[in-house]
Length: 100
Image (cartoon, rainbow, N blue to C red):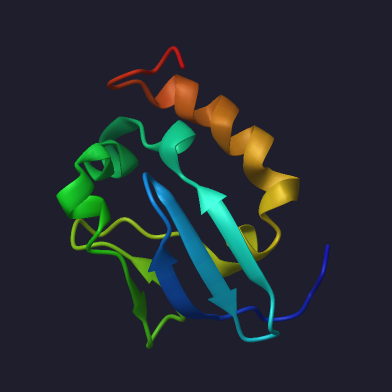
């Protein structure tokens, strides 16, 4: 695992539940969050108006929502390595469309 400290420096909605996330090392990644918006923490973000309120918290250097939901910037930076595990976990979290 990479031991570098990754910080999110920008976030932009690119449609649906997808965000373009920029990192301090220059990496830009587009992530579709729809499959993991389940359960108590992330489920409320299925509301587009709420999801659209995403912002970069400059203090913790990651993306956050008014509900308190956030993601570890290292996980997002290395998303291809973690996506399958998050999708599997989301099915266990329940909520709307948990079978997807």
